[in-house]
Length: 106
Image 1 (cartoon, rainbow, N blue to C red):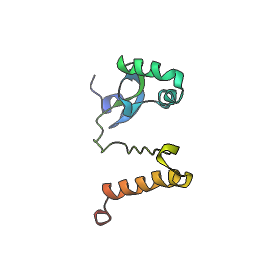
Image 2 (cartoon, rainbow, N blue to C red):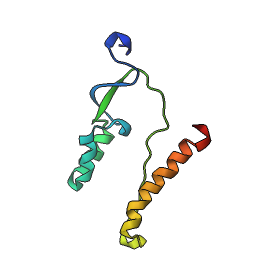
Image 3 (cartoon, rainbow, N blue to C red):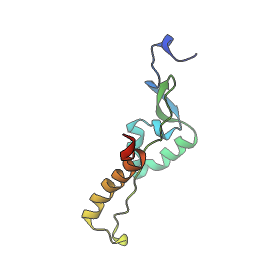
Image 4 (cartoon, one colour):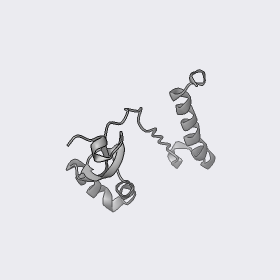
């Protein structure tokens, strides 16, 4: 069935939940399971089988640039201090925003 005005869904509108392997559309509960070490193997198996619960999207959404992901190693082996672990993600976020939207383009 073609998505669009006939089914009441707008462009890129979330209309339900389905199974799949699109990590960008994971529901929060699936993402939270990665925080439980015992569930990581289950998550990996469901990902391989394309059986993760993801948001179902109808219509065509404009392609964006994707999510901004920032990993900061705050372990003692990296010599990180607590204040650096709190400041680094904010600095990375600010730098990414400058790259995405330079001051002269606003």
